[in-house]
Length: 400
Image 1 (cartoon, rainbow, N blue to C red):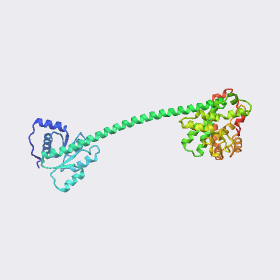
Image 2: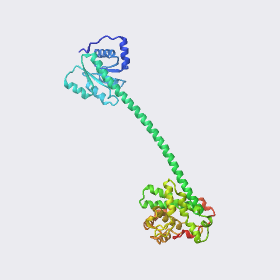
Image 3: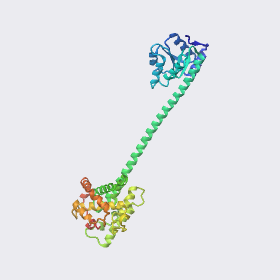
Image 4: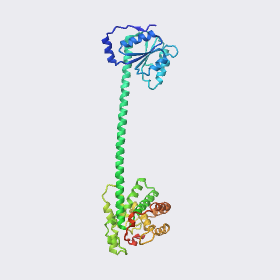
């Protein structure tokens, strides 16, 4: 059946204008009859498009992978008919957006429904009218062009988002590294401040490490949140920072302190709190609390304020247990170290008077972990090799 009707002559200028207008869209013409292919190709050229021809379904499926903008597909072909070709095009994710116009002499409703199910976007009946063909191709190509533009914009947007996300991720990573470095420097400064105080007092860096780990052990055993355990671990070494302000004649006196000297010595708690006061750092705020309260006693007989029971900050109560245990189990030039068992026996006498009973019990329950901390932090710092004058032994007794 002839498929050509109503072709009007167009000038070369008109065709060039049309080509420019339609940007030389590529139309794939699929028909098993050569005269039909040639006629459709001529019509497509008149409309300002370029064409590519295929004589059967197999050739069509190969050529559609070229940069084809629309397929004019004959419905009735031997072997692989147009319906099957349409299905296979639609099943390919890279091709499923290409518009398909089914060219058919079939006018029955069933045939058209079958074409829709196969993936056809539109129909055109034989014989093909040039004006009708132009309208249908123009509409479908404009729709495809809009979808392509949208897809390109979406791809560009996604690329921009990916780049900005990558840049943001890199910036956040750099910020995190900077904050981590600042935090590490913050911890290092606190550690060195604590070491400075203990150096003057004749203690060791290992003492500070053990103290902090004992406090963290107790904090975990009391089910404190991990953040609070970390604060406790890094703030507890500042407990005696106030000894920086105690005169050497008192701090390093070999004999027993007289009442006046003892009153001055006890002021290291207040001095330490003053040194650490006013900071926005949670670590230094916790250090201030610990420095001020770690010599308070459960029964209210401690110093500097005679607080009792839960009036004493929790961190201070924890530090009191850790500090005394390490003092009793650490050798000094003026005393021998007690075994863990003997130290616990001595501390048990202060249960409910010196120490918070619950915290002391929790520490005893985890004595094996405390022993591991002792083994890990056994190595002393180089300052232990110096000739450091002994501290008054009475300060390390339970009642100190």
